[in-house]
Image (cartoon, rainbow, N blue to C red; front, side, top):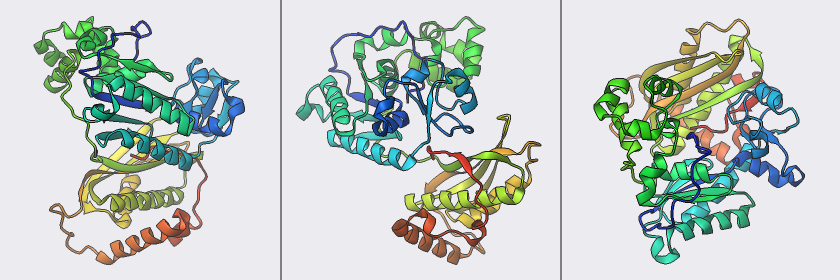
Length: 413
């Protein structure tokens, strides 16, 4: 889902010349909710929220629910207060992954120059595809028609000269639309937007810019670059200055390099028992390590996230020898948890993440004293799980520790 701030006053027609616009951003509309409606056609047109009924956060919401202020990542209690008439459906992550794979298959039929950004969005460079499929806008329209015909869900597409503008365009095309921003209209389009539309402008940066009278992209673009360096720092100021003038040299990368691997669990009831939390960490460590091995990666940093019932969040991290072994990840995660005072009301969410990833074998040596048999055992577990399912084999210490989760994070990164 596009996150950039949009302008309700932005024009919907910037011209028809797509000759300088080879970049497409395809973004599924309210993806999880749209997939759920396939099994609940009677709910089409009604406000629907996907997530745990009582706890956790909103994973997705139909546009009918969004009109009441509901949005993804919002606490479910807040969403239900804003839209009490909404129907709340539990998530089905396996179905989302399957439909996502089908979407990516359709996009891959258009061009191999495809960069999957998340489960529901991707960039395409159709420079080569235009020779056989026609202009960029025609390709975008064909993509939308095919996704709807084959999968029954809507998609919005932005067409532009750069990745950044294509993503903004898809956001302004929603829901279920297509927007072209011709190359010559890049700067006028950007200058029609609020400054929060720029990548890297979060709440704090926006407030800082506001104190200096900079509330639009046009106002930011009018600032001398040295002034932006002074206000925001050299790197951030230069990046925003370039974006405000339509400069984005990044190419579509068919294979994105993962920067981290992690998983989180939001509990149905707050947990104060350390043994139970350690059992969750162990399970999460095994899931992270399995994903690392499947991707041929090792990590150099282990981090944990601990969130209390009042949504206060504590994070801790520690550098480690490169590893893809759950035993190593868990040992560090448990030590980090030992150093965190548990909230008086218990833990609402717990997560583990492995960062600073690199390819296995790229200058990585087994650390002195490491036990190679642990990795062999875990690799054997991977093989069994791939054949019989993830629940077929688990550490014995986890058999009696299965805290009920309200919403395991489906967006494992």
